[in-house]
Length: 158
Image (cartoon, rainbow, N blue to C red; front, top):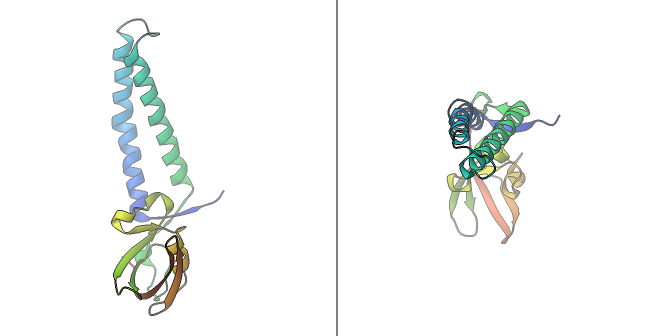
């Protein structure tokens, strides 16, 4: 089985969602199905069909999360000594050489990626171009907008 990298925060978020689905959502859906059954004929009962569909989505998400957690390689970057190299889980400070714009990204697993919060997937072009590089290195990264040159100004194990 392939293992997929995941940060501690990502694993905790998935565990919290799984707990919410199992302890709150699932009982609510079961209750909604029971209530809809009391209304009589199931063939033309829209509430019943909607609740069953919602149950299918919920059970599918539970299986999806359990599968992800079972195949996750959880990496706590705070326990890894900072060598100045870019690795999975670190927060990288970058300086766009052309525009002098500074930006920082945390390199995370696919399921945790959220560009609005500056969390990029390990499989993104930027992350792939940064992995293994060191502080003060200049890196050319091929993006959809063309080649962008960055200087790595910091690597933090947060």
